[in-house]
Length: 266
Image (cartoon, rainbow, N blue to C red; front, side, top):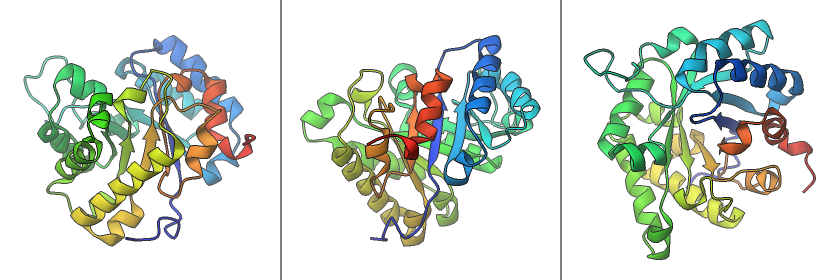
């Protein structure tokens, strides 16, 4: 198993806005976020924001106007086909034209509410990579699965299925987000030790699929009620390379604190 600290992976803090903020509100949020974050913040941390599709153009142009290219634009989802009769879907080929750099794939809400399968997640991962973007591939277990002792099997199965057919260098360049479903939007958070244990298991699974070099390079985020009160402890763990943030990313002041977690009191 590679030493996770040896790779010196740059943390990625990502804000998933879900179905919040119209494009007027989105402009205000990123303007304030750009004001709150200084150039030094981006030397230590990568940052992405993932607004609804209707906001992406507004966010992109606002960040350009604010000269904040360090804040990457992300999407929350995409289809795996480039084009076709898929009413209401968004092609992965459209997103790079809007400077989208990261795409969340296989979020638990997509899996649980919209029936996305492991096979579909794998197809989307490949489509995102094909178009030069970075997938943030989500995995995580329900409370019932954890209490029944099936958390490890569920998560490692999702990881193996999502990475199927990828080259080692493609795996090493992507992001995996561990999000225990029972901690999303509930106010509950996995302890830092529990989160680290699962993220280490994910890295070990990646090593088994794609080799030691890919396992050392891949960034693994934790997601699930990440807040200023717990972010520093989570980020201190050797196998946690960032956070996929939901509710706290809607408030630019709260999100800025997460990006600046090194400055927070323990």
